Picture 1 (cartoon, helix red, strand yellow):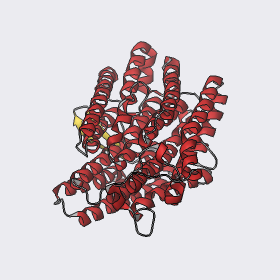
Picture 2 (spheres, rainbow, N blue to C red):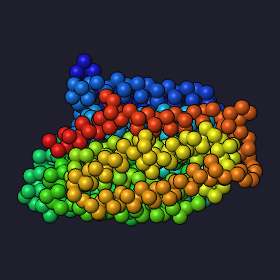
Picture 3 (cartoon, rainbow, N blue to C red):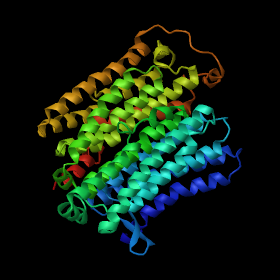
Picture 4 (cartoon, rainbow, N blue to C red):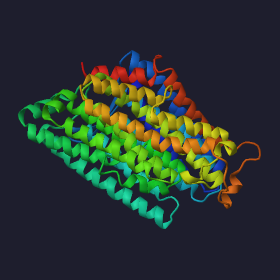
Length: 504
């Protein structure tokens, strides 16, 4: 059994990567075979990840596989508790996003290219989750940058190509900064592997050369901060909203932004360790940047009439809750930051699914056009409302669990100014999410744009079923993880387990 488990990381990578290679070789018109392959691979991966839960969490096994990259430096694939949390999220959301994307892109050109790179994007995300050392993480992190570019540029319009170039510039620049930090650290202390509580070699470097250790920390966080959309490195994200709705969902909830946030967790908790990072004095600047980003993203979201851009700036704000929780030096706050990795993903993907549905069926892309949508699309409107209330932090949604733990953690850490930031952010969240909800449910319907989108209307349901079902499913998950936050294997329970280990 132990031997079989060591192969699990490789098997899961293969399950993600092989479909991509097959899809690229398929003819464009082989849509049924492509759909079957995509959905089957996503389902198999989710089942395999779920089967790992008792081994990783109960038996505390961490299956590991090594390959020699260059003499003295290995590529390491390892499934530990944190990677399980991250890759389970990606597996679940890959499945629902695949179903959504199949219907969303029905009849459109270049689907072979889209789904090929879509599968490669998920492969890179799985590699990031399973990376057992900095070098392996960096390789998959840069792979994610390259394979996401064609997805952002998918429509091929001038706006899409410009947004994709901007994304590539930001992401490659961040990757270069991170590369400098990885090389510098490796030259000083050799290959560094992630370890709960931080790597011993990094702690020794921090004791002997604190200035150097702090500088390397800054480089790593700056490189990760691009994909994590920390201010002022966030500019690519709202511009990338010209991409198809499934790509927007992928960027915000499954892959790119989450990869940056996950990398911050690895660097703070499993590379430096919170105690060493605190002694170096590097957590307070990151806490301030995260707090500024939380407020800045909320204010910018408030000013957007374009629905997807409002959601994008919301992501800028909401993802920084993860960094906020990690830097507060409190077990409860760290729990909130870790569980937000899951809760924000579920809530935000619901909102982007709904935004795509509304645009495809009624041609509505602006908040000011949402009046009376609840009468036209009641199920979509209900799912959007659940996602919006979760972003605000209204019980019993997933977002409430996050914000409660962050607030309590800030009090435990005696950071009253962070409590003020969280309250202000919650009020701003309400200010930019409640008006769309009010428009949807309490305004009279108004005329909507006419055009080819009318063809997407379903004769019985309010939208094509394979577009509607993923949005309803993720909205259901948002409620379930909020209502049953305390049950075994829930995201909150896993986050509490991880946070306790960080501070042992």
